Figure 1: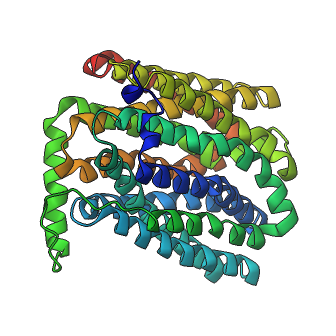
Figure 2 (figure 1 turned 180 degrees about the horizontal axis):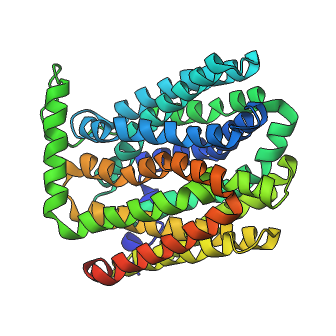
Length: 415
């Protein structure tokens, strides 16, 4: 393997190093926001509806992602992608401060929860603009040859810090309380802004960036992206596979996973980091594996292997209410999700032209929106059936559905 094609080659690009460093530092504090929101609602909600309100966090995120996701992809194909990322991060700073202030005020009635869920909705909307823009900008900076290695390095950088961040999350919440912990997380967005500002990148898109770009034009752009996806069988079914896997598996293992660990397994909040950090360790191991094999030809096999690993790990996660099972399950869930999502992203970026890349990446990111939105019906079923009954059923259903797609859509394996 020559120097120009080695896994570390993208690090020679200054703009990529800045994009990579800012994203990694910003993502370090993502788990802190995630767990703080869940545990704050769990601690302050009425006893008879607390699980529903915890699920409403995910539903708010999902609705925000689905509402703004396709529009965000259209914007990424029309405007300077670096500037778009900076604007989204500045808005996220303001919303993070607002959520922290709401937690500090102690307002937990109807008005307080309504404000909190609305802010969670806006946060997800902005992240739905940020995510496809960030994915679309990597091939612009690196070119098609180095993009697979760059995407793998991006995942490694994020996951190197993730286990440490997850480990520290419980302690930070315990020491600073909910409001202080959430305010501390704003530093992640600030660091991202600093790194983006230092970049020299200018968008390479040839689309007209008219100042009067309106909602109607955005709708037309979204329709064009949808038509492209429908006409490309491999891209379409990769997106469908991710949507099904995440919609069935993510609500129980991620959004309601901390609740399972706390209430069913009996792990206290201050020790939560020891458990959830294993998701990050699994993701890190997978990211290192993907970096080492960034030039693999049959990336579809990695997508399928990662999806099956995720499903099997879900089964392990809920097999019984023991610490060892959730630890092993989290390791596999993190590895499976990373292998599937990163390999899918790289493959789609290679198959899709720059002119529609933002919109296709936004379609790809909808899997997370659906996953978040599905948290509400999962929680409502859990309130009726209990977590211990529902989660094993979901684990089995996820495995069956994913295997059905893999068997019937062989073009994914051959991609």
